[in-house]
Image 1 (cartoon, rainbow, N blue to C red):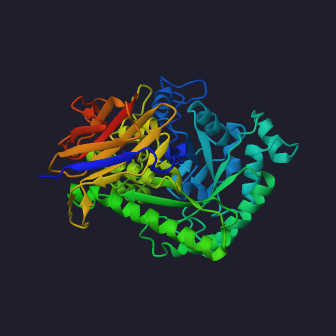
Image 2: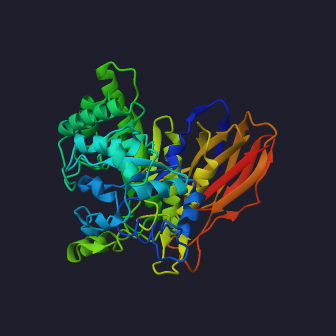
Length: 505
């Protein structure tokens, strides 16, 4: 029998104020993310600019504050000039990263307009693979300046009078990866990133910059890459990026749920590396983390590789369209808890991606095609909705179990968030014991008079259940079997479940 779990939550034990950008996402010119994803002029829901209103409604439901664009691997051969101006004059380009045809019907101007409709800021990536500092400066001038200069005037000629005011910029993408167009060695890339950031700040001093970190924790250059890049760029950048995707390698659900322990190790290792460089440089500045690609991704790997090899240069083909299961949603919930636990240093994070491509939102093709919520939509939506405020450091006593590749796996993973303004505190918890329910007790300090306002949960016995446009098999339920007495919350959390407990006055 699983042991009882006790979680102590004290209002004064704060980790950090959560940066809302931790609930960011990502749109890349890849597969159907853009075309028949956010943009489909012939769709019944299309607005005057060709954007699908049904998709926009779901994006707003997720309350995504920032969206990374236009890649991803795509950005390392991105000629931004081809994506602006009259559509009939734009060049079609071969996208080398995903071996597809890019028509450039949607570019910087259109995406900026879409982001405004989605109530999101743009996180812009610049091409430091096949291009460099000069192209980045020209792009910055086009996007942000209101000067009497060539590229600012060009934007105005294209019908965009006001600058976009983009503040957060990615200096390339996964430059440590041999698969990347323009792959570079660490010090070479670090020098280029430093010089590009320095030049861009001369044009706009309000900017923040993300330098490329390791593409994943298994890279052979992991951690030494970050140390070498930051030895060159530390004084000029604000964040180092991390990317991590979770794949189920066997039929072992319990071990799948334990993968976020590896995520915790990844984050702690990069924080330690950043702080090592800070000490070496005698700097008082912290480099924070931008976890700007994360998600479950493995369902379509084999088919995608085959299609890109055998059917190149197609327009918006079906690529990376993972159909997510119930257990994938639980893993994403665990990842969100891990990110919140490190909110003192993880300031930006992007669920990769947003629509159709390894995404919480899927669309059917055709003029009457529907948009629907994948299973992973719900933990992200809950965290974005209820996870604003201060992350609190919990003390948790819980049972543990072993899996095929992980020892000492906790039954309950949890975090609490204090929203002072709303006088609410939210507990996010996952029972990753796949066999047994766990009695859960939360002891609150500093929250006298609080009651249970809502208890939402994802619960299920079919780990492979999926959603579709026709049927939503995985959706949250409202629980009422929860009590609070003398600031002590009591309930039972079902096996393999995602739980959201909202308390307030």
